[in-house]
Amino acid sequence: MSRLPTVEVTVYPYECDAYGHMNEAAYLQLFERARWEALARGPGPDLFRRHRLWPAARRATVDYQLPAYPGDVLRVTIETEKLGRTSLDLRQRATRVKDGAVVAELQIVFVMIDTEGKPTPIPPEIATIFGGRLSARPGELVRHDVGDVTLSVDARGDGPALLLVHGYPLDHSLWGHQVAALTGWRRIAPDLRGAGVSDAPETGYSMAAYADDLARLMDRLHIERAVVAGLSMGGYIAFEMLRRHRARVMGLILVDTRADADSAEARKGRESMIEVARTEGAAAIADRMVPRLLGRSSQQTQPHVVEQVRAMIGRTPVAGIVGALEAMRDRPDSTPLLPTIDVPTLVVVGAEDELMPPASARTMAAAIPSAAMTTIPGAGHLAPLEAPTAVTRVIAEFLEALPRP
Ligand code: MLT
Image (cartoon, rainbow, N blue to C red; front, side, top):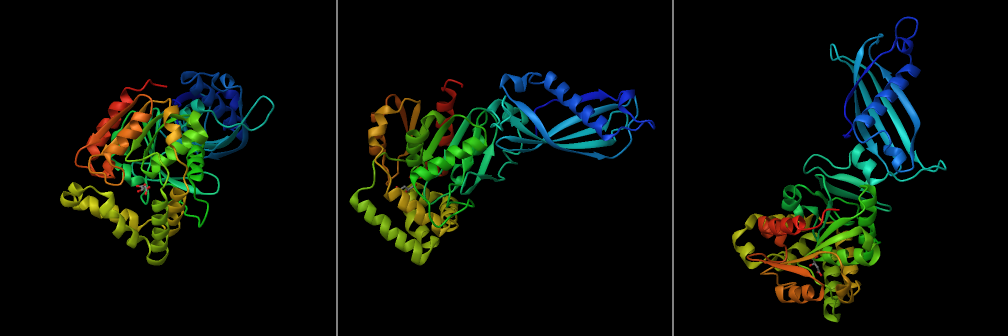
């Protein structure tokens, strides 16, 4: 995928050898002409200069399919094979206009260098133009290396970024409806470390580690700022992002979450859950958690949601469950942070959330300057899953009212 237009170039007589065939140097030149032409018709030939950098070609391979002769008109497409942090792999294909036959393909690797020749990260504007395989077909997860772990990410759509952070012991599918429906936004729903099919190391879990993973994921996706939506533990992580990566957060959606740290009793509860996870596994955690996570209405009327949550917890790696419990047990109190929140904020809570009830959500919202709050009827602690259309609607209304970056 790239957003550069397809262009047509004519083969010049001087580009051919004595037999009328093009040699490698001529093809490299022709493909280069096509790239400049595409830039000129698209984002502008000064795209790189505007960012004070230059794409230095590091490797190029031409694959010949058919001869080309002077006067042939070739249609050249440009596709991004891979968009790295500083590198860009392109594939260009030249097709003869008169019969649609592919005459040659070029694979070329560029490294972005600054004015001193040092490799430099690809800026968001250029990343957006070249696209790359940063997202996948709907529902397909793409894996992104964020340092010591690789995260699986459901990323869809274009526009300003919306980062959807799931709670414990869940995965990205919690946000399935929102990811599918919130068009006009670039929706990014990762499996956190230790969740879903992301890597689940034995150690290395903390709110700081989760937040740093997400900041690195934003780097990988060339996203400078995002609206961060966090459910429950996802909310604790959103607070940590404010503490550690404040400039990356342009709005907050706090769903079924709280700001205070664990009480002594809650910490003891974490210890016994760690023991359950270690000795009995994820299914035992699901047995204990499902009745607390879902509202009574959902438990009575939505058996498919009950099953979905049970299955989601059941496939969570034990290392990830234990790591999340330790991270939540040791998380800091975010209450002092609330009055300092200066980005648009929406608080959403399920009317039947018994873990983080509406009264506590209201107290939290009141402490955040100009936060809006919505209660979702008939939903418990997993409102985005239990009342998906209602939650998507309130999020959409909130996003629509935001100033566009
Ligand atoms: C969650 O849903 O993320 C957890 O229930 C949060 C918690 O246990 O504190």
